[in-house]
Image 1 (cartoon, rainbow, N blue to C red):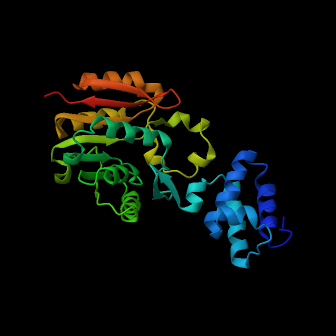
Image 2 (tube, rainbow, N blue to C red):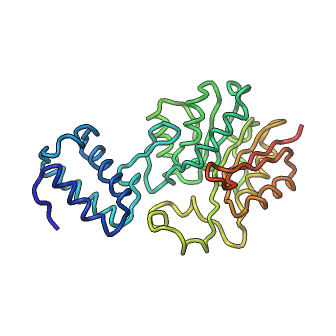
Image 3 (cartoon, rainbow, N blue to C red):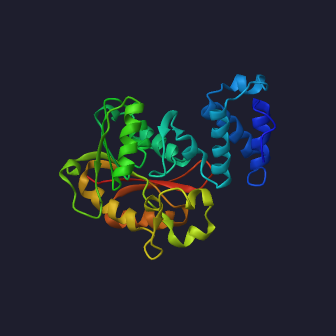
Length: 291
């Protein structure tokens, strides 16, 4: 299908027709508006008020490729190359997970739990991905000493880029948590926070193509036979890495909320608390190390 002409209005109609078999009308409205604004540098006002604006050949080609990517269910955030987390711009690529709203709630809970001590905090994010968690924390508490690690060097490159983008200093380093604790992580931490892999391999069949085909599997999936693999390992590590009264925060799988809670109690944490997200699902845990 070709566009009727090279006006903004014709391009909008082209996108609606191209995407109609694949998405709901509400999703298409969003995709068309954001595509025009970000790919073409058109303001929201111009998008709404100037349907006769002419697009050049390069701009039309961008729209064609944009439509093709969306019809392959490539996530909008990857197509545009960025998203927003906790009010901050975050660049994303298929090397990192797209930040979710639930993770913003975890950050909010952590900040509220230690608000009286924030300026002297030493914070470590394990499995940082895009770096959205430590960057948001550092932005909110500039005097905190914030570090973050990941097994993927590609993810760490994205995270460092995002720290520079947001003008914050976060110390990033590579670490496979199933190896020994590196010297960089051997200091005592006030807070350790993590959103580790927690989706079962067997759940792949139920997942949307946008996630399954594009987001990094290493950051998503765990073996069916050990759904608490990362929580156990990080829980055990954090037990020795946290200072007295140090706090561990996890984003968790709602299906294994009670099991994760019991696991942390068995490891030896006290005041283990489970919290629901805004949709009412148990998705976060906080645990405290004893004196």
